Amino acid sequence: MQEFANTHSMRNAIISQMAENGLEQDCYIEMLDYTISLFETQGLGREYFGYHNINHELEVTYISLLASNQKKVQLTDEDKKYLYAAALFHDFDPQKNVDKPHEESVIRFISLDKKLQELLISAKIDLEIIKVLILRTTYPWSGETRKNAETEIKNCFERSEITKNDLKLQQHFMDIGWYLSLVDRISGYLLGDFTRALELAKMNAHALAWRPSVIIRTSVAYFEEVLNKEASMSKAILRTLPKEMRKNFFDTILSFMKIRQQEVTIQANYSYENLKLIPTIENQSIHDDVNFAQTLYDIFLELPKPLQFGKENFKESIKDPETIINTLRLNDNKGEIIGFSKGGPLEKYQLREEIRDENYGLKNTIFLEPLALKMGYWGLRGGSEMRHMFIMQAHSRKYKYMTSFALRDVIRARITKEEAEFVQLFDPERWDYYRVKL
Image 1: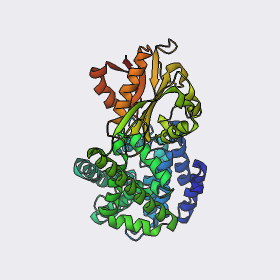
Image 2 (image 1 turned 180 degrees about the vertical axis):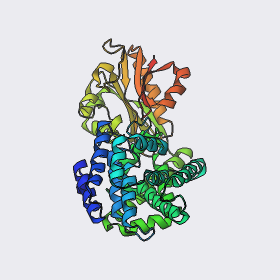
Image 3 (image 1 turned 90 degrees about the vertical axis):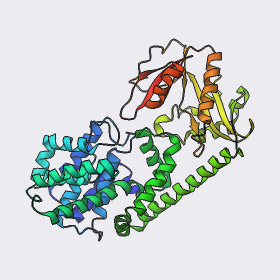
Image 4 (image 1 turned 90 degrees about the horizontal axis):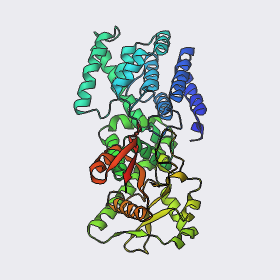
């Protein structure tokens, strides 16, 4: 949506909602600006490719105020200041070592931050109740995670002078926390179309170190849970929001379900052997074909943004004779291209500045870019076969080493099988740079 083109516009939209909800004291704007500043200085601004960046924090704050007049939980003016602060701080974990903040880490941080303490005191907000609301956003709200959160919530209620002897008020704040937990889970999917929703899903998957094959399946299950297990609260929130946001949300769910249906069809055809995946070494002459380059580029764009290496000169690099390209085609080596592996000399890549590869400049290492497949074809071993074909070609060109990026657990599994070694680990993504001796 246009109003959220940047952090400044998001800030203005929140301030507008604050005014409508009676949150007009300077301390509330200071809380907002302090949160934005802290996230951006810790590298968790708009450029951070994780789901839990400053965008998410501000989106949850905006929607929680926008939908605050829903009928499920009656909110007083006093409640709204607690809701605002809890929404703004719910993922307040700037020193995170994994993308999804642990509620315990968030509470530890907000309990120790002196500036935050001053702002809460000036707003006459009880920190213990903020902790309760944040703990209630724990997901999933079941099993051991729920049990642990409820134990800590009970302690917070007992420490608070406002709630320690008032079970009815305790339940009221639990209901506000329930409301916030639903807003936390759906806000990002209300504020844009399916393209944006898919990008959010990829961000979440990349940040949580999920394999690409589970993105759509997990997204569908996620939305099913929101609509079924949380039906009463999700309906109350959606009913209060503008028509455009409701449309965004349901269009997104339908689109995910449609892609999931396509995935199941592909997997069934593969299982019945109606569909075969053919790894193909492409002749150098096809590298100059404009249509070939465009086909690969379209598949390349389906990757999460941090995995799109050399985007600016992608098509030019295909023509480079030092570039190795294999494709994955349907049914035979002239069939539709549904994936590819691509790489070239390490020296031709601008990798993350933290990487110190001792072989850089020795011209003995080939870099394999992240494998790219069309959605629906992950998990059928086509990527693995392309990777092995790439390694064979790199070996035939006399390279001594191959480096690439992969999920940490995948690299660990390759240490014994392929003599793989970690070169540089990256947190919170756990998408690490590794080397294989050829």
